[in-house]
Image (cartoon, rainbow, N blue to C red):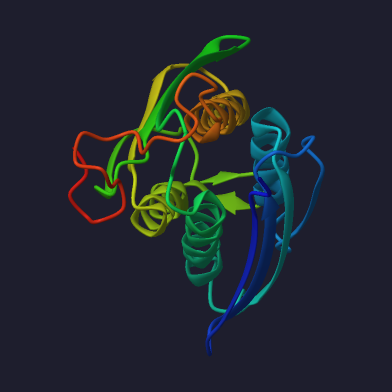
Length: 202
């Protein structure tokens, strides 16, 4: 089974092209023009073992909001397309990731019930070039377009860089677990309702 997808979204604010292989080797080519955001998405792809290409243009002369949020939108959509009917997937995944003094927890349920619970505080407005206020918007857009429930919690940490990186590593690992195929039940939809993408889940 080939679990790949690509998607392009173009508006007056952003132009984003994404291509994804769920069963990849963690290869990536990310170009958002926001250096630290590139680093976080590369970290996500590597730790998720996803092959991911993301090429973007955006109105960064205004601010980063449209581009960061729309990257979440497009990535959520391309994951949803690659997952298809969700047959045989684990559906749920979680990971607790330590990075030096920081600890991040991410859990995901790809159940057709979009929701985000986000609990993270950063000391500074910017981490590298990335506006930390927009990270929650990224996860919100991702979850809505994935049609999944996403919980992101920064348990503790001192360095904003370490906190952010632990978060995206945990995100990659949790998504890897949720998207992985369960060899014991490869032909089954992982829901008592028989569907996981109807907006209701189980």
